[in-house]
Length: 286
Image 1 (cartoon, rainbow, N blue to C red):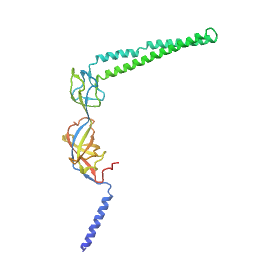
Image 2 (image 1 turned 180 degrees about the horizontal axis):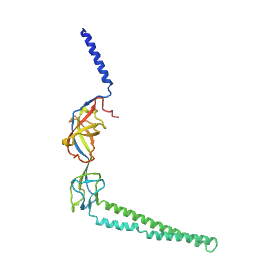
Image 3 (image 1 turned 90 degrees about the vertical axis):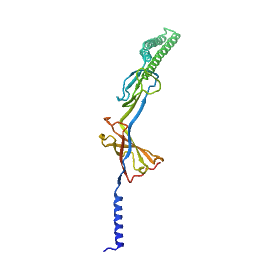
């Protein structure tokens, strides 16, 4: 029979072997308790107008899907459209430029003939000087005409930009959550519609301070919405707060949840399970 000292030695040997086996495992994982979370839109915006005016047309309704840059509403813009038409006519009118360039070409031809005549002693040097002066004046007038055309083009672009401000466009792809205004209403700084992007969705979770350092960006979580028909969904950790809230002894974690079919609504409560590695440690802050 083995005495008590022998039993102790055997137990100690077993614990040493077990410890060596644990040390050889690169990373053991422990299943953390599910965290409460909330599914939110990835982005929400109250969309308004850069100009003051009266809504002439509303093109969307609550629940409509809109694309980035799509026109949501149009303000009255009769004056702006007229200004664009006038500026466009000026920008396209190149008769003065063509006339000035033709006059400059003629003056240069006269100057070339005057140079030949001076060499042949048919005209005086004073006549050559006059021809040179006329050529310079004609070139300056042609340049002034081109500059005026460029100014007219910039005025046209300015008028077109002012007209564009009468259109209210979607800043990103999403769903119209609210429509605050309707046709005929005057707006200044107030929003017209609210848009929410729900692909992807954003999952906001609160984790206890004890898990700090065990959750890292890129980690996968299993999200279970309160509506059971959606089952369990896979999301990816994209943001982990670096500060623990002292009052609640917790920190926030954000996950990204794909929603390409727009079938998952935002605003649902949920739970998320994260697998935290026991070998993870908080990264040092440099």
